[in-house]
Length: 386
Image 1 (cartoon, rainbow, N blue to C red):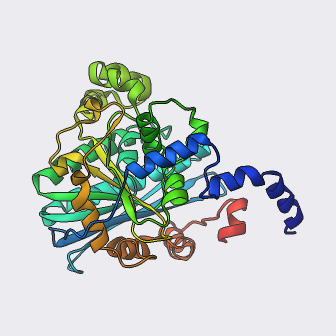
Image 2 (image 1 turned 135 degrees about the vertical axis):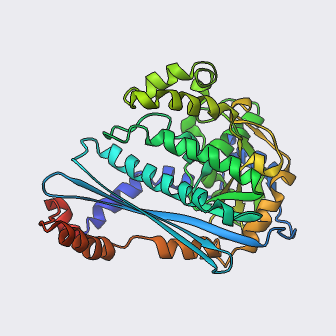
Image 3 (image 1 turned 90 degrees about the horizontal axis):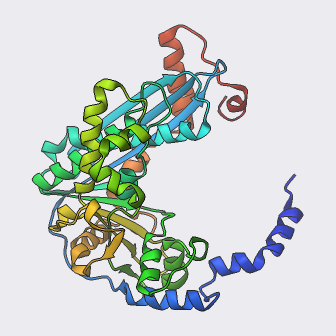
């Protein structure tokens, strides 16, 4: 059954609202003023040449399977490539855990595991990356600020802290070794840029009225290649707890990480106390050509010669375009066309991606052979993965 008629009826009932989210026309006076403010913060692409010649890319992938006895299997891979094919490094992590009760924690654990692996593969090979550009898939700000509570997985409660600690080290090492770290997101749900525009308009608006960053650029700038005024993100994602992080990291640890091992509590406090002094993150949205999908760039500002910190910017502030001009140049120089937004990341993505075949034939067979025991998926997964 296709339920085509039922779907058509639903679309017709919601046609007005759907059209307002997709059309380039302004739905109301608020959108008109927002579009005018976007115009003031949209800049033409420059022809400035990139300065660094060596480039690297890091990407990861993940998979999850549940066995009939309730065991959850987690697979995560990370790949670092670059320097014109002269460097290739791989990392793999496999975990088998007794059934996790909360499905949200399953996906959160997978994302944390993969994110941690991606950062670790850079740190483990950092000596080979000096004086270069390193592209990472995804948002650096989101990776650094969205995991400020423990994960409800026995034995891994401290994994968010380990990711934060490794990112603090990564930001520091990149500055020491003259590495320009650039996060590239093909998609973003963030409203940070839109909210900054609304604030510049001198008005307040409910979140439900503010479109996402990607929406306003796609609707009103899809025929105007360019990039947005860089926005420096500080405590934007954690403003309600920044005071506690700065002054009472012990209280923060006890509230959000109550179950980490007592031997790690002092270490955990130090990690949390360091967050306000971490470099703020500059973001910018780039539209490389007419009709293309916008990309989001994230760069720690310490790598751009800026000293602003997460804890000193509340919640965000616009920066001069020159702050990120070199970053835009690197992005455009490494672009391979509309479908290849970044040549190295495109290759890394294809190479590191875990296919269904690999998990359900290769990995499953290895697991079965090594254990000498049957490995059977739970009934729901058997329908899709065999």
